[in-house]
Length: 100
Image 1 (tube, one colour):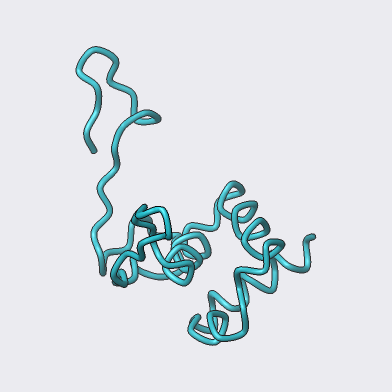
Image 2 (image 1 turned 30 degrees about the vertical axis):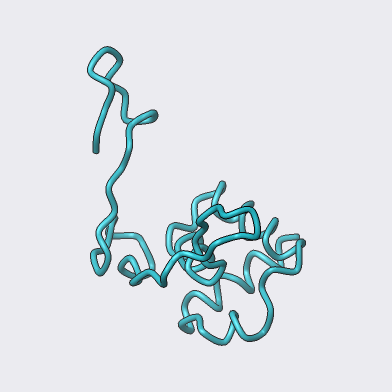
């Protein structure tokens, strides 16, 4: 991670994540490969929802579960994206939905 030399704190650092590596032993899966970024109508580059969902379900911290709830409430997790998830991540998505 990269930290501010004047105020070196992990909380405000830029963390590097490597595709194909498990960040923590308790993570469900290694970091998945990323799809190409998508450009919004305003020209802003964003990660595809399917990639974001996999990252959130892999980490599965409280803030990640809340983000998944937000995505789901906004209707951004259609069956086509859900079908791309592994069995373990699909189970976690079901867990998040059951807790709402």
